[in-house]
Image (cartoon, rainbow, N blue to C red; front, side, top):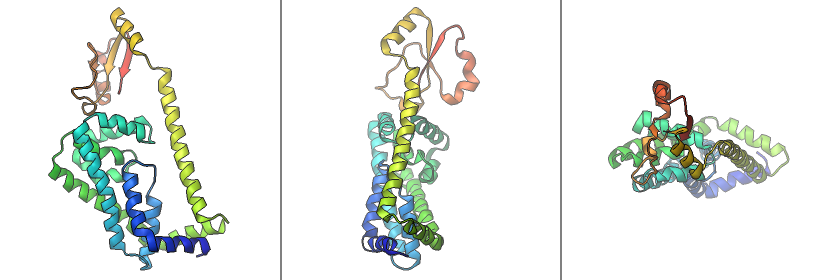
Length: 271
């Protein structure tokens, strides 16, 4: 391994434990800091005996689990409002967050076992568990198992394929760019892509949105009907309720579409 790779190795050996803990903590808290590349590299180093696999596993678990506890408690305390916060801080388009809400509705607590392997569900599952008032005992049991499995799987993958990880690092070294610069460029490109993707999604929605005054006029004239597509998790006692709106979930549209009048404009209320 070359100079830059050796520097990265030395850095992870001397500071890897604290870096892993705080990096995973930040990622699971919602920051756009993908931890998988770092965990794979750390797992590869553990195969060479340079750092402890078991300590890495423990610290990865602790970082993720602390964030999970925070989101779970926020879900219990804030209810459906926390989902609006997630839509604002997440780089995933709102449709991805909504799809993961629906997945949690179907799978329930079992979602906590696989949430960290699925984009979007990773940050939604824990607050959703709080919103539905999952018991602390059940949450702890499922989340601990899921988090331990995720942390062990990623680190073990790096440990098993440590030679391939070293080859990738060597390939990056031969590109002539400093390792830190490569990592920063890759992270910047990923965040920029997600930001543009989200902006495009929101721009499409704005084209067909309707304002409160226009909505009131449409409803008073009888020219339109509102179909409320919000699921039960986004509804609480403080949620806005539109009189006369037809309540459906997206999953019920195919079965109950006949209830929607065809002689009026249809306005969908999603969030």
